[in-house]
Length: 83
Image (cartoon, helix red, strand yellow):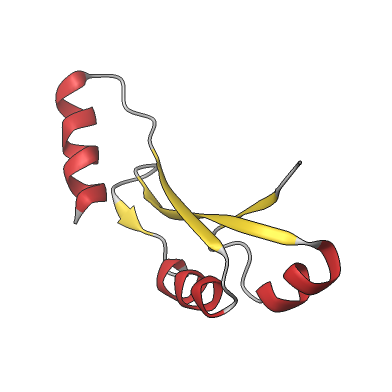
């Protein structure tokens, strides 16, 4: 059985998770929590996407996009993602 999962971030501002779930069988969502392109940041829509996906009863995952090239910077990104 295949499960439908979508990826959302700050570029997806008006996602109707209930409509996706009811009309397309959405099972889960992967939400961008932040990244380090141009400096470490938290995605401004993370909390909204998380709250709305949870209210729709979806499975939720998160990711942090990094373009790090050293172990020490990767550790800093991991610490930032964990906060």
